[in-house]
Image (cartoon, rainbow, N blue to C red):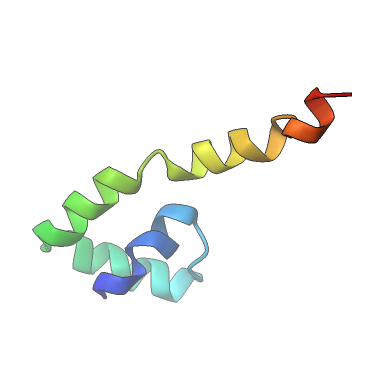
Length: 59
């Protein structure tokens, strides 16, 4: 279960995996802490996806 924290944070688990991980998350402080650290990653990735690249900025 511990290796699914990033997948959960990114929202890529299927429904069954998501439910199983949430049950695990209720009792696992290690995963709770890691999820807290990763909580901003999806938003940061989205920001990067929509920001102009260095090559585009130099045009």
